Length: 229
Image (cartoon, rainbow, N blue to C red; front, side, top):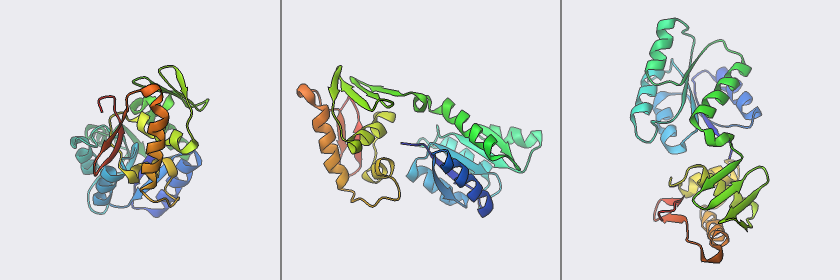
């Protein structure tokens, strides 16, 4: 599933430029125009990266970045600080708050995309790999093939996407809504219980030769791929 970028910006024109260029490159986007909304979305949507404007109507970007970096769930979330403040002292403050990069307005869309790609490569090296491996399962993303213990596993397109989401973050529990968003997409309406049907199919395909069930069900929460299940 393509990376999700959370844009935290209160200027509509800036938001549109960022969304257009990010989505053109295949990224998914979510938008918040204020600090409290940004903190809520960062926890609920679990983006892969945040583009965070320094000046916001309620909480400064500096404070938002500090909060993200002190919370367990968002501590590793990469942040690119976006601001009109280009002085060295401001850059230092931004980086000291925990930002991974700092972009000064006005900027070119190509520069921003390059910064996003560089930060994601550093923070999520698995996104650059065409092979995902966990326990005895291997996914070849380029050839669209899956194997377990060296034996081929036949999956439908939906089961393949679900497995990829789980394999990219082993042991992490995804809710049904998160799996729907990442495997089906935001603009597709699917009943949440449909996830259960496809998880059952995925389990059946993976449990070849009586292999251990590696998909963990967390009652009331969702699913994870976890060899300790």
